Length: 173
Image 1 (cartoon, helix red, strand yellow):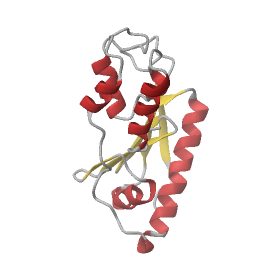
Image 2: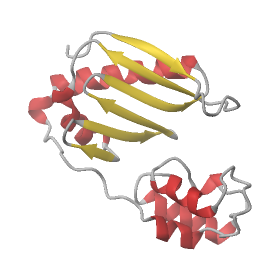
Image 3: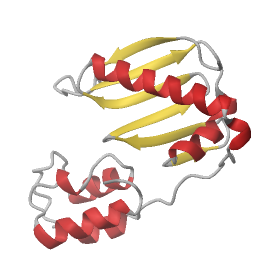
């Protein structure tokens, strides 16, 4: 077993005290850097950084970053959701480590969507209905995996379907 224990920290962003979403950081008691390229292969990492090793995933609308000594999860509804995700990742880390002889490690991130392509598919009205100041900010967040077609209220019908299809290519929908 590679990952045995951790200390969990729940954070409400200080810069946005009105935010409903929480963040969770699991401070790992063991260094798991050796499993990170294998996790990237198994779970299909969105972004991979070689040095220091880190892989980021988008799972169920959450961005999850796995570092050698910590796991970070954003956009949590509550502490219980954070517990479930961290425990799931602990199992994935240990299972992947046990099977590493059967897995080809991946040292590359997945292809990324282009901000300009996302922006072309948005209404470009800067209406702020999504909670962002501009459509450009929304497009950047969508390119990073934090927003999807469903998060743009004025986007309907064919334009919404086109954005969803574009993001789906990158496992974002």
